[in-house]
Amino acid sequence: MASPLGEEELLLLGVCAVALYKKKKRIRRRKWTKDWLLKRDQYTHTNLLQELRLEPGDWYNYLRMDAATYHHLLSLIAPRIERLDTCMRRAITPHERLTATLRYLATGRSYEDLKYSTVISAQAFVTESRPTS
Image 1 (cartoon, rainbow, N blue to C red):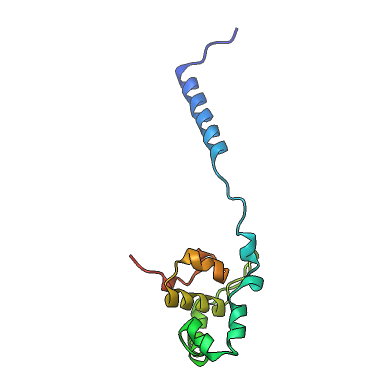
Image 2 (image 1 turned 90 degrees about the vertical axis):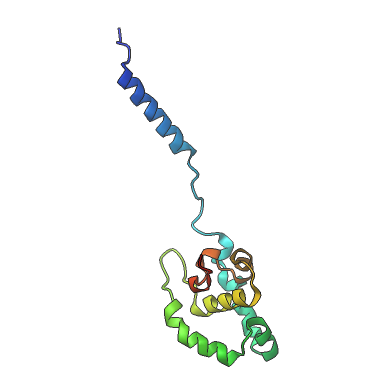
């Protein structure tokens, strides 16, 4: 006949049961990134900029600076905001980062809102443009 469990054994059994329950209940992320964010080349705002180059007034209205000033600013800041591609995903180019940041500064829209028009996740925006608190 088996001997009844002691107090320590019951406590250990209870701890194991709780640990297994919590492990099963954890929410796991399904994907590293959303599929539409991986199609940045297709949906990005930089495609629009290629067309706006033909219309200097529209370019200025979109970025609040002329193309020459933009390219000068890009040449100054590109080495500081450039990232390398990884095996997981393609890096956001300095051109895309700067344009998204300028749109943020020009419009005052939230990162979550800009994410849809720039096809850049809110977490990936240039951190220098984030307000500090």
